[in-house]
Image (cartoon, rainbow, N blue to C red; front, side, top):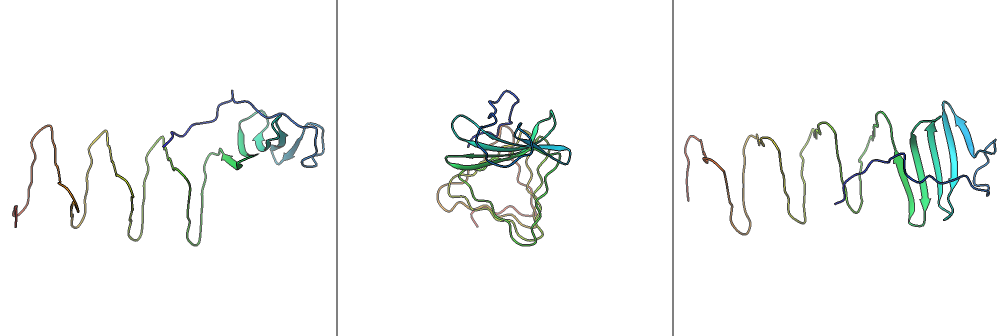
Length: 161
């Protein structure tokens, strides 16, 4: 899965076009939307771009319409998605990166189904805390490896029972 990348100010930006894509009141292909500028651009390859940005600031909303379809980029102080019903995401690959913490919370059950392998890696300690815990290998062995002692504490430790 690819790493998420941030846009940089060095990226090639499309230039305003001669063709009328959207009627905008001035020749700069820009219009004001509140304190923002709305830009409609087309590059030499015919790729159209709609941008919403603060004047002299970073692009906050960008829709690039290319041969494979639209690409939407949003940059904001905060983004909230609210749905009264279900919410679904479907894509080829999914990557999520938070500079801080990630918290998943469900008022019901949480399930994940994975066709391939699952790998969890923590730089610190990993803890599982539940009313009960069951580990089962449907095929193959269960391996526990440690660079130090392995402790099993319980009221009774039953082996092969």
